[in-house]
Image 1 (cartoon, protein in one colour):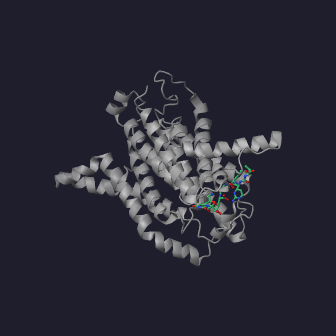
Image 2 (image 1 turned 60 degrees about the horizontal axis):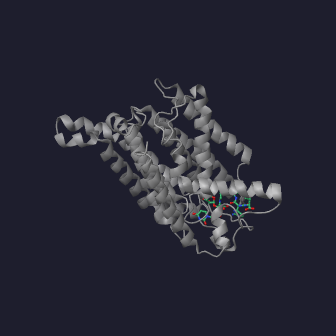
Image 3 (image 1 turned 30 degrees about the vertical axis):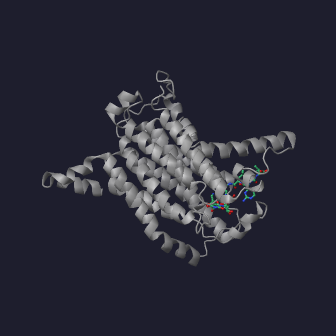
Length: 358
Ligand code: 57M
């Protein structure tokens, strides 16, 4: 909205023309969100402490987690504030997909908030029941993806990486597919969020990667050159992705080992949902499995562990999700975190490479 106001001044002062450029506004969105998270961080952490919003740690996890008991949680509200303000200030308010993505992000945040709130009130690690949580997320994602699908000219064909001419049309089935991507992403980030900075690092790399994807998809000439589907309006989501990267970076300042605050489900579910929505809008749905490979790996480790235990009564990992496995093997927490970050950067580069490999 601020963008509209400032850009309107370009007739009088030529310099304001710069606000027309998505790249410039994406950087402004990033800086705005980063500043909000950095500056308000200490006050939010103090507030959470005052309200006694402390983490209850399960006794059956790796032992060194017990000393994290009472760390303020629900720091995700800080991230959401940064993302919302950064996006509303610098994205074009006339672009409906921006509002839809923001709506789903805040909706997932609300579900996570309810879950965290119940855990805090009950002073244990049981929040919303798994069923209520899951169906609430599905409902929010279905509203967002359904509205997207109903938008005039929405393309229901899939874009398959490496095969530029393979574009299967899902028609109305696109909606359940998109809901699967968005809810899956939310849960995958949630599962990953079990060590200081472990989830937020890959969220930063994935947001920056989707900043590039959404920008390219929304730019007719770049899309044609790269032979990717052109999605009018998707470029404005680059501002959203920039704000997400900025807010996440600011949050990492306080979530870095040893963490002063955890993001809670309010943060992890909303960030995952946001990435899922960015992938759906920009038609980079499949590549999210590569760019968000760390989240996929963590989820896969749980699926395999549960399947193996149910069928063979044997575990594959010492404990799932896989970061617990490395903890129990004796790796220092920062080592696991930084190595997972390195993997996420490699995966982001691989994801970016798919732009040319078609
Ligand atoms: C969230 N939450 C963290 C914090 C964070 C199906 C099963 C695999 C589910 C899984 C699970 O519950 N995952 C969901 C994991 C928790 O963090 C809070 O939750 C928010 C994210 N949702 O923001 O508020 C703990 O993680 C640690 N933490 C940090 N730093 C951070 O920045 O150290 C979090 C953020 C915090 C803190 O200790 O308390 C969590 O792990 O609970 N369940 C599990 O992960 C459990 N695994 C398991 O049971 N494995 C089994 C089967 C089912 C696969 C097996 O391997 O046999 C483990 N988790 C815990 N204890 N805590 C095992 C036991």
